[in-house]
Length: 227
Image 1 (spheres, rainbow, N blue to C red):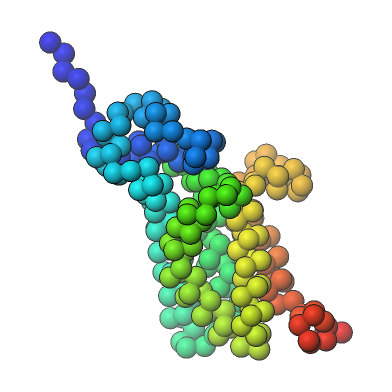
Image 2: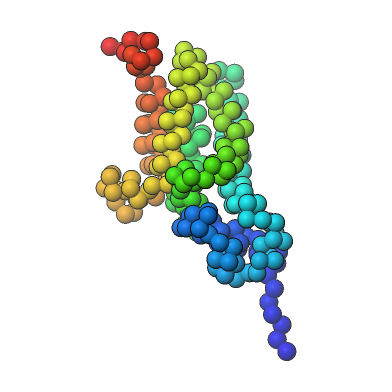
């Protein structure tokens, strides 16, 4: 009599998350059925219900698995920068780098699924899935408040409304860059060996975002353009 190998609970949970992440990225949240997921993961529905309880809870777990540690790392870097600054405002580009560096690492992560996740994140912003976008906003909220406060201290001359718009454009640019790496490669003509160089991408993106954040305000804001 042969004994059937049984996966440890944590391995089964990880397998379900990995498969769900990839299926959601390829097919979307609505089109990915539980039958598709269980077949691809090699588990039954009872296993999914045991570990997550529902499809909605599974979706949340997929995002929390990546976003919680990403945001923790961002906050740790911001804490380090503020401690080193001894109470002085940070340079805007330093704040930008603290936010984008962690997520850019995922662009080159093919072994642990990071690149799959950033493509899923990009798809989330283009699909009409308001509950999921609301979930992501909730997960980002504490981190965004900390970075918003850092930017306000760094740019006290910039009205809050203008700063918030610029942050909106900045994070939108980051989301597109992460999700549309193939498009970026076509536009830039990047060499194959450099396509997922996180350091080079950080330099380009940080320079671009800093320029937008510090740009002279247009006439529509009531302030004359800089000469």
